[in-house]
Image (tube, rainbow, N blue to C red; front, side):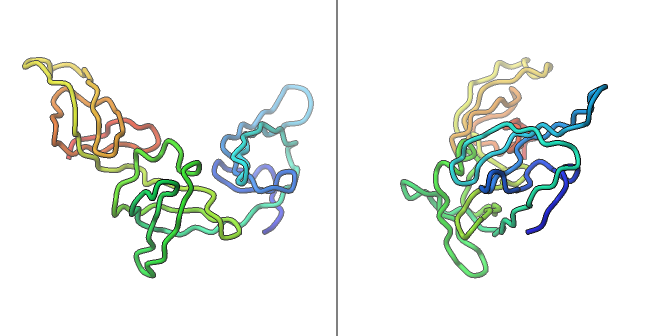
Amino acid sequence: MGAIQTSQFKKGMYIMFHEEPCMIMDITFVSPGKGSAFYRTKLKNLFTGRVVEFTFKSGEKVEEVLVETHEAAYSYFDGTNYVFIEPRTFEQYSVPVDIVGDDKVFLKEGILYRIKFYDEKPVGLTLPKSIVLTVVESENSVKGDTATNAMKNAIMDTGAKILVPLFVKVGDEVSVGTESGEYLSRK
């Protein structure tokens, strides 16, 4: 752990804030016409999950937090935790529901995810940029409707609800962006 300046801040970085580890969720650099520049941030406390907004002066130093990352494949949900298995050592990691949050619809068995740990406790989950899901339910499209960029609702095998083009049918595999939750392509 070392001191870093506010100019080195990046989204997803971990810092100490009021003696507790926090993740930078959002950052905006503001340079007003008068006065000194500053960084407006949104910080998520790793222990409580609470999000606070704080403004740092430009050039201010803060302590960076060392967060360990392990790559593991999703295995199953045990009722209170999502269980991931490290493919080389077969070590199991239990990640609480509140850490996974709404990203649970992008958890699929066998796919590798990055789990972030602080003091050997899971504090975050990083999804792959895109994931292939199977359509299990969708509205039927009418013949001739495929000329426009019209979309319809579809439910994926993980429970995710996304908009897909009219030509996508039940049973099709589609690539979905995990950041936006949007349809990318049909496989």
